Image (tube, rainbow, N blue to C red; front, side, top):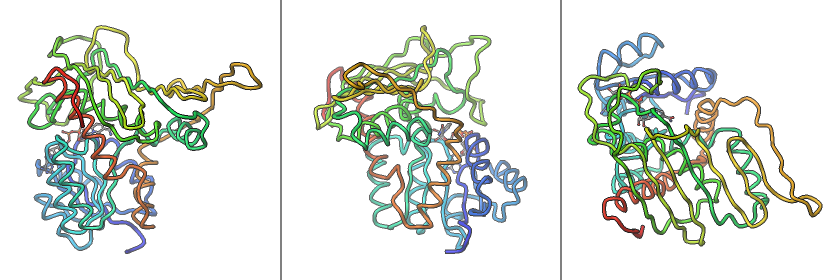
Length: 348
Ligand SMILES: NC(=O)c1ccc[n+]([C@@H]2O[C@H](COP(=O)([O-])OP(=O)(O)OC[C@H]3O[C@@H](n4cnc5c(N)ncnc54)[C@H](O)[C@@H]3O)[C@@H](O)[C@H]2O)c1
């Protein structure tokens, strides 16, 4: 492998332009942006021109067939993650895949099989794991500071934060806030719990607010926002059971009439508990209740995510967020939708 990892970009939309490319540019001694493709060929040409990218390709198969591309970063709509991963794996390219891994657990399993067969490095873009707060809690958890983590709460409530664009079109997204932002907080909480095997889910999803025209609110925007359709839920609540007896309560919304709550995980262990944001550890010292507040300092999670991916590929290491993790999280997400539809707890 050459000194610099040669990256191909599949899907050059908002997240790739605002987060992936700037993060890769911070690692300019270690990576080179080598190729780009997008369904919107003009967009691919613009991005290619702006960043001096050598190959502007017509589609993902053309890009993955390039000999001078070592790895791809996938930032397409959710419905194309599966094809992009299959194409890259078949061509022997290493893969960084944006969240959610897929639209269904069946797709995720197919992707995992392809990755395993190809023997390439695959990393899920679970960027929240790369926050300093997450890493501090993970380290404490691995040191046994919390004891057995038997209950956790995962929450992320946006009051009026439904993204604009394909996100509300089920055929392109696979779901609403559960699959779009629930994925971040469910994954992170599960990771902090030590990744126990999920066994059952009971959930409800709500379509009460739908489309709205509230003024004075800011919303994430896909790069294409014409022909909007609105088919997705606007909030959800879930209860997940794990093989080790632990449970997780989840609440997530794009739109809800209540206080906005940023991404947060709360974990309750037999020895101590913790909260992600604000970061706090609740324990005992010298026989008294004692709380500590570690200082995470400044963080740049996307830069840390890309740095980790690049070093794992170069050193042949297994990334922090594996294909197995992607499949397990996808099972929980789809379990939430299935349970809500059937109105009962379902086994995973
Ligand atoms: N990690 C995060 O915090 C975060 C934040 C926002 C979005 N995302 C994820 O990033 C992905 C993209 O979201 P976005 O907001 O950038 O959307 P976007 O619509 O701005 O960009 C997606 C791009 O993919 C292109 N595309 C779609 N299908 C394609 C295909 N088959 N081949 C090539 N290009 C294709 C579209 O033309 C578009 O340019 C989604 O999976 C989303 O869930 C992650």
